[in-house]
Image 1: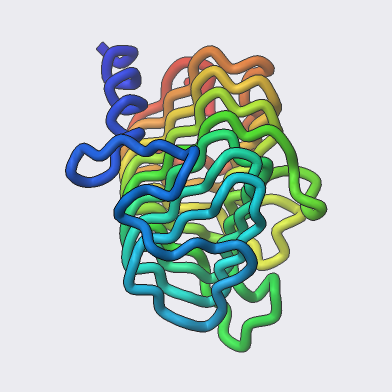
Image 2: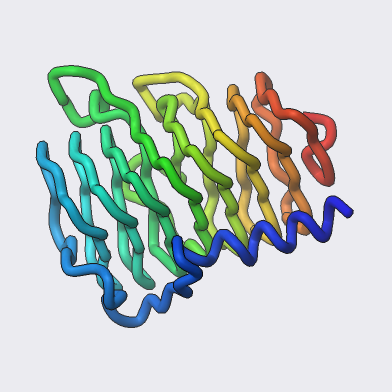
Length: 219
């Protein structure tokens, strides 16, 4: 039963509100804002698309929509609020954290109110030496990492200087990833499920969930 739920969750998270499937070869029809450099200290009343191969930093800003990341792109969200969904397919690297890492006057963690789907990530940023979702990042929906080929740290990590584990408002699923993923200090309202990952995810301690299964049963 749990495996069926995980499969349904992975499929559902690939859909944006309204059942719209994301095609990442070109800007989605509903997104009119392309980010190819930075969005700083502002509010964007639209969805944001990071084109293939582009680099985008969203710093101390609010996006009233979705954020979609194209193939080979690099995305950094620090002190960002996204009212919709975050979807990345085949990105080069991903960073989510607190804007205090980049020198904002008032510390502000990243907040994503919808679901998060990250799949097929291929590389790492110039710093840290892994992809990170850290510094008390909050997600209101489900978080799914699937088929990534580059390492991730989720929660507390020595290279995330603002500190603090993440909060997941629903469930966290790690599926068929082929690079190390470390979980530490996370508060997960739903279940934590890890299946088909090689190597298996690393338990950094302090992970709390309503239930835990698969490779993360002992977390």
